Image (tube, rainbow, N blue to C red; front, side, top):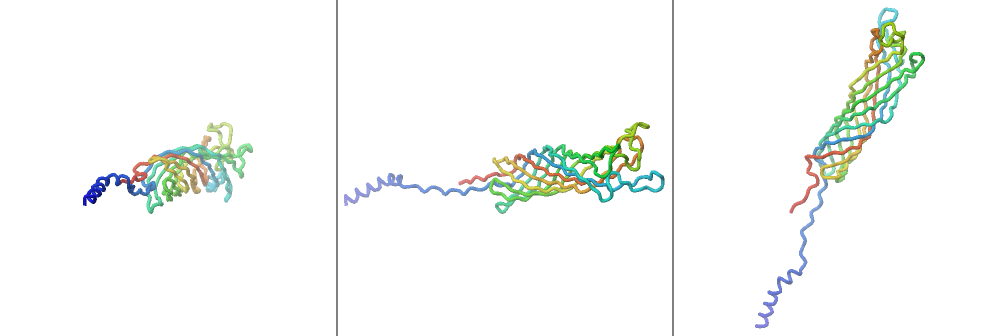
Length: 286
C-alpha cells in the first residue's frame, strides 16, 4: 500500500513537467483572402495618340456666278471622292476616375470617365483640285482634348485585372484649309482681306465638338493596398460630320463651304490610380 501511494504521488508531481514536454496543437491557419477591386479611384495618365482624318465634299449651294438659281458647288472634291491623312504620334496627358464592383470571386464591372489634353493632328493635300498658282490645297486637323464616359468588364486574378471597356466619346477639333483657287464661285480667289488687294489662295477654317464612341482593352495591377498602375489601348470613332468652313481671308462676302470630315483616333496610355472606399485585402481575425 505504501509503495502504491508513493507511485501515485510521483505521477501527480511529474504531471505538469510531462505536460510541458508534450507537443501543443497550433491554431488553424486562416486561408488567404484575395484582393478585392470593389471601390472607387482617381488618377492620372500620359501616353501617345495617332490621328486618321478622311475628307469629302458634300457640295455647297452657292449663287451662280452668272446669276440665276443657286448651284451645287464642289470646292474640294467631286461627288463620291474622298481623301485622307494619317498624323504623326502626339503626346497626351490627363486624368481619370471611376468605381468598380467585384462579384463571383473574379468578375469586375465598373463605370468611369477620363479627359485627355493633346495636340494631335494631321495634314493632307487635296489630290483632286489644284490650288492657287498650281500649288496644293492643304488641309490640317487638330484635336485639343478628348473625353469619355465608359463601362468596363474585367476578370481579376487577385491583384491583376484584365478588362475591356466601351462607351461614348467627345473631342474638340479644329480644321484649316489653305490655298484654294476659289471658294463657292469666287473665280478670282481671295484678296487677303484688303479690298482691291492682290488675289491669293482662299483659306478656310472651322471647328467642331465631335461626339462618337470608344472601345479599348487594358490591364491594371494593384501594387499596394490603395495604389494601382494601368496600361490601356483605346480606339475613338467620330463618324462623318458636315462642317461649315468659313473663308477667313477675303473682304468679299463669300459663303462658307461645306466639308465632310470623318475622324478616328488611337491612343496608348499608362497611368496610376489612388483607390479609396475599398477594403483592400481582408485580414482574418481570431
